[in-house]
Length: 536
Image (tube, rainbow, N blue to C red; front, side, top):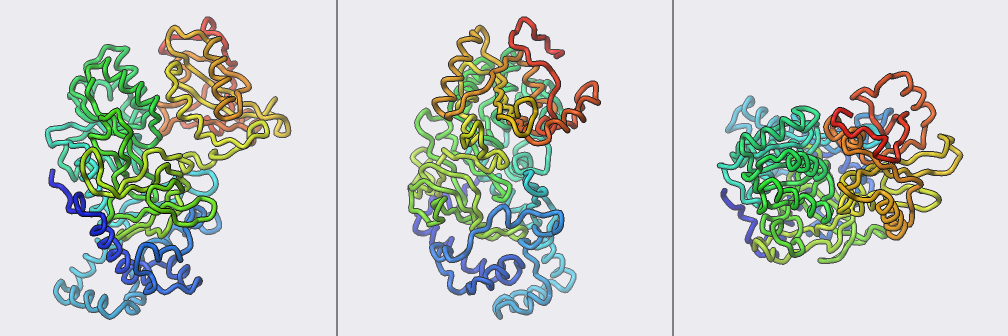
């Protein structure tokens, strides 16, 4: 695949070019055509002309999720961040911009000019963020943006050293979310054949396994939990995945312990030398960023996620003060779109905290001079409705459970359920940890170990640890039937009403969400009473 001009430019050179892009972008596109940012800059008496470097951006107020989320009384809020070059706004543009547009109109004709403007500015593709604090937030792409997304995907596949002879099995769930469509456009741009399965809910887990084996898939893209689920089944069925050489993980964190489990399973299915690459992305960021193949293969510390300096500007700020931090300093990731046309964001606070911040030195593995983001990111934006919650009087970040449980060698699967004692909203919090132990593991020993581990690391011990067979816990998680795994369940609000509604059904329907419905089953404490069959 052809390499990108930015790959080996000295950092001073690409940062200077990035600032030139930023200045022109703000003056010629964002300020004239973005209703939200025009109003924001005018309200704060900020002239675009005062911003000449990335450091000068510090005068622009942050944008947060709450600023762009639609509300029931105002569902059109997200449209305010979409560039809208109306005739009135175009007349107010700089003389040089008006001359460019006039020249294009003269050379292309009215029809050709309108077609070019539609291609550049008319939204044609939507993604959505998910959250329960507001309505789903759309992020809009124009045809111009989709071309940029294809280019980002091509670069990501280039980082993974994929070739046109490869075959991608895309096992991300089919939805208007970033992971599935990033893989779709990446494969299209790179010219790599791909089977887009839609995940277990669409094609089905066993058919995905059949496709990987019979078609000799070389690349698997999936969430870490679902990839682990697929490989665990493949190993138990004695499947041959010797053709598989690359796993690209996205959508969730990939704790080091879970990566070790995946690597162990890859050895059991004949793919001992496969690279397991982690990616980072969020819907508002429009694309995903990946570590390079050499870093993914190495047992040393990862070099981090390789960024695209012509596509975005990343800042690291102090999460408490908002002060911009220097290279290598840990803090919160702040994102600014660069040259995109649909939904535009300036200084967007992701809520994600990164250890080691930004690194502008050449990658020690692949030699690229691209800026890199540290790999250790606390995904507080992933489960934002659960990011901080009080349990038994202690403020807890539930995302901290991920590396402890997903990476535990004796835990096959887990799920966390929060409820009130006796479903009384005024009673004490109860924390139920549902676990499938590794084969041959003593439940009594594992229960004691997990109690001590969680008390030591998170300062909250589970009220009760409930053991399940693997099929039953997979059913609770919905890995095969839901678009997204149900790792956290919070039944503290409206539990009694949800229970009443649930009891009217003889069996839970596929469309039901375990986050909103309290289960009526009795929890088995012993495998002797649990149905171990796959029909459970």
